Image 1 (cartoon, rainbow, N blue to C red):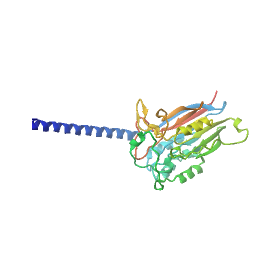
Image 2: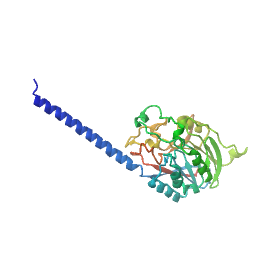
Image 3: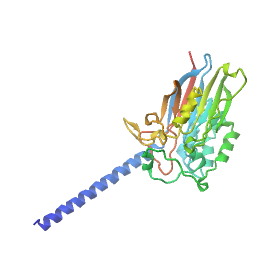
Length: 317
């Protein structure tokens, strides 16, 4: 028969070991959360260059913003967005998910105020229409993207936001197309409503005159969520450049490996950055932004800093 004293000591050691292991795990989780929380304000500017413009064209500096998820009183984010106006971009592109709170519109417009002095264009994301909700983050690891289940009580003031953007001269490309001249080059835009909510309708390219296709121009397509069906449609239609957001770059990445999820069917190795999308024998540069903010219910970033992108378009040789 086992010695009762020895048995009690063994049980006590096991309990103490389990308690220490639990405490260590809790401490590690706390450290990781604290680190991830701190990384949400380590804003960076990613700079890219593409030789896409017609020969002899002047360069165009395009500032790509996405996934701001603005919440009231985010002072560091506001100041950083203000500072981007010092870049003096020729054009600002906003690919959606601008709001992170029911009361975030005033803070968003204040933060974007200096940038709204420049020409721009935008498409919405789901967090332009509906506010974020608390949910189990493990849902994002599933095979199927976490599509929001929205209701009117979570509706955000997107109409007022779009009106403010439009009043500043930014072009609404929600299932629309538009042409504009920038630095002497005609840019033809097409954009879709958020594919994450299955709202996209491809509007094609601006018609123009019967000879407009022969005139020097560049075709740029905008979407919030870079679902493959949308990227394929854009590429098949002869786009020269695709701009997207939504993925947060994975938000929590493993150093040396990268993103675990994209919250859509985009491969994880394309979660952020500039790559080439291929479909049916055609290719198009795809720039996916890692985004500027996060849901206020998941305010962490690991190995994936918040970013804006300054994309310089230059002439082809």
